[in-house]
Length: 510
Ligand code: G4P
Image (tube, rainbow, N blue to C red; front, top):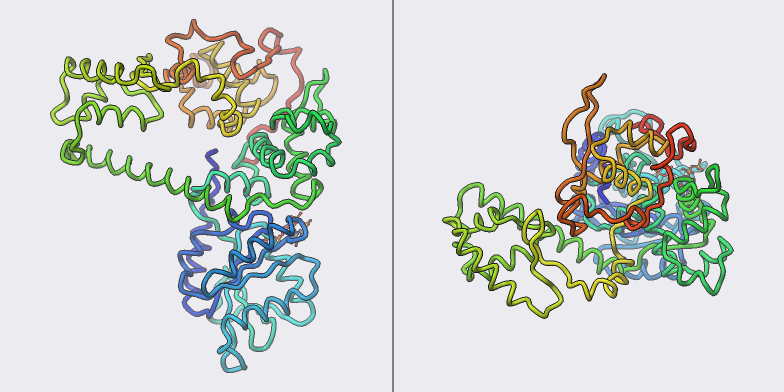
C-alpha cells in the first residue's frame, strides 16, 4: 500500500531534533507498545546512533502483556539501551523514567551537571499525555528562553533532570509493508493517507491468525465456522453485527472498517500487539531485500542511460540473461526491451532463437514462458493455479470494494469520466481510490471529454489485460468473476442509487 504520509513540516522537526541532539546526554524514544518496531523512527535511530537510549513502550494497557515482555527483553539486550513499559494511568511514570535514565547516564547529576534528555516519538504514541502526566505538580514547562527553539520545550522534571520535548517526527519512506498497515491501524497516520477498508482487512487478517479468540468474543462469531473465515468474511460479519448497513441491507464497508479500527484503537477487541521481535525480523529482511532490488534496478537504469554496456556487467550467456530479466520483472517485457538489454542490441532473429531455447527449457516446469499483448513473461502453469490460490489468499494485495467497483466500471464502460463512475456507483470516488489503480498501472487517462470542464477520460491499460492474462478486452470475464464483484448498480439508473457511502475528497480535507 502506498501510504503518503510525510507532511512538509517534518523537515522542520528533523532540523530541530538534529540541532538539539548535539547538546543532550541521551534520548528517550516513546513507542506504541502495540506496534513497537513499526512506531520506532528509523531516522531517529540513525541520527542518534551514538547516544544512550531509553525506549518507552507506552500504552501498555492496550498491548498484549506477554508480547510487551518479549519486546522489553529484545531492547534490554541492545547496547546502551534501557526499556520500560508505561501507560497514562501510571502514577510512578516520572520516577520510573528518571531512574531508567540515571542508570544509563550515571555521571550526569547535580545542579551543575543536570541530565539533559531529548524525548521523541512519532505522532499519537501518547508522548504529550505522558509528559503532562509526569509534569503534574512537580515539574514545570519553561517559557521562551535562549537556546530553546520555538519547535521545542524544556521541561524540568527534577532540578537536575531536563527533558527537551520536540514535535513528533516522521520519516520519509516506510520500507516494511506491515509497518504501514500497523501505523494506519493505530491511528498514527492521518485519514487522508489511507484506505480504511484495506487497513481494516489487513488488521482482521492478522487478528484472525493471532487473536482469533478475542475476535470471536468481541463480535460474537460462530466458534465452529469463524476459524475458517477470510478477512473479508470477517468484515461482512462485523458490518452486519454492528449495523453498518446501507439502504436495502447492503453492507456499508467503509463504516464497518471504521468500526473495526475504532474498536482496535480503543482496546475494545482486547489487549493486542501487532508484531513480535521474530515477526519483525522477517518483515524487515523482506523490506530490505525489496529496497535492495529497487536500488539495483535504479542503478541499472542509470547505467543504461549513461551508456554503460550491459555486457560488461553481466558476463552471461544471452539466454541466461534474458531469463534473469524475465524472471525478475513483474511486468511483461516486449521484444524491443529484450533486445535493448544488449550492446549492440540483439538482432530480432537471434532473440527468436533465444526465446525458443527458453520455452523448451521451461517445458514441464511450474512456470511457462508465454507471449501476452504486453510482451513476454513467465507465468504459473494453469494446473498450479487453484492450489496456489491458497497462498494468494494469505498475501495477495487487497483492494477495497470501492477500488474494485471503480475498476470494474472503468473496465466495462470505458472510456469514462470520474463523474460517470460516481453516477454509476452513486457515491463520490475518492482520489485515493483512483491513485491505487494508477499505482497498480491498471488505469490511465486516454483523453478528455469534449464537454464543459473537459474532464479526463479513464480507460484500462495494457498492463491490466496482461495481469488478467487476456489478449483483448472482449475476453473480459463475466462481472461476477472480476474480483467477485457484485454490481447491481451497473444496470440501474443513477437516480435509483443509494446515498453516498464514502466521504468525498472535500470531506476528507484532501
Ligand atoms: P502524541 O503526543 O504522542 O501525539 O499523543 P497524545 O498524548 O496526544 O495521545 C494520543 C492519544 O492516545 C490520545 O487519545 C490519548 O488519550 C491516548 N493515550 C495516550 N497515552 C495513553 C495510554 O497510555 N493508554 C491509552 N489507552 N491511551 C493513551 P485521543 O483519543 O487522541 O484523545 P483523548 O481521548 O485523550 O481526547
